[in-house]
Length: 94
View 1: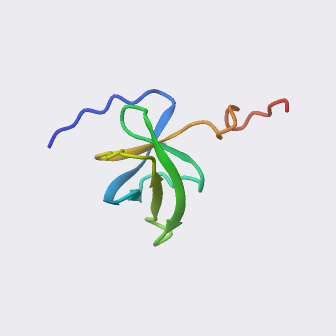
View 2: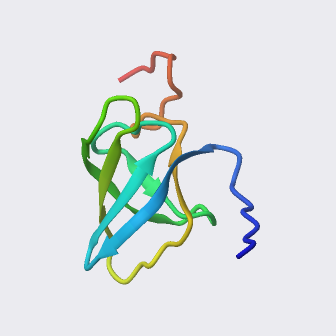
């Protein structure tokens, strides 16, 4: 199967989907995410949040709680931002 991914620039590939059961997705990590990080499909559509990271340190897996009725395929992606609208490494004014 040959799939073309047109990912928006602000996303990074987090992992390869291994399994989906009901509302839980398991992925093999390419770039380990943070717990609570929002996860997207290849179109940039939000599909859920990381709930746990497990397995070997060199090649961890992570679990994502999926939003309703999403069935992503292939890879999952994460944002370059910290979830509060501020770029990583930059201080914001609160």
